[in-house]
Length: 134
Image (tube, rainbow, N blue to C red; front, side):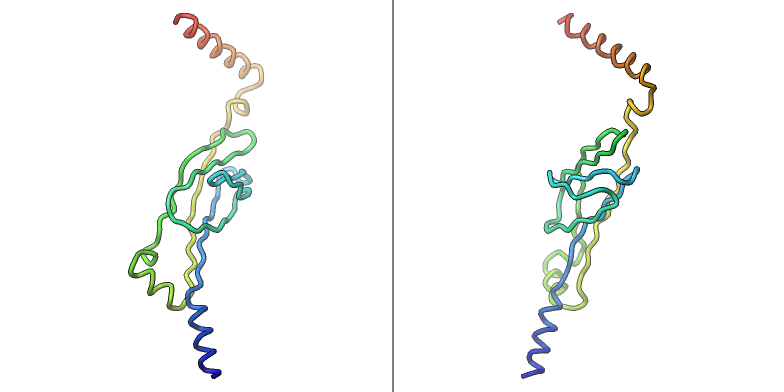
């Protein structure tokens, strides 16, 4: 009876696997949202269930917010029929997808306050001129 339980325990443990996305950014400490769910500040790791394309938003004070799509590609052992063999044999599979995002400084942080206000007003006047002519 004991060998049977041991064999059953090994069989149940063989299929253990984890899927994680590791997200980093420049600058560090940026707030990350994946598919409208806040996952934390970089560097951060989040578990996921499905491979595919995700909507990602990365925001940090003094930087332009980044809205993009990122792909989590399945490794070869997640495709049929290899996935069945991989999920039933040890060792456990630990998949980590790595994404890195670089944020651009915002205009407010790169220009002085007076220069920023001046350029903002210039752009507003230009747009107003385009709208008024139509």
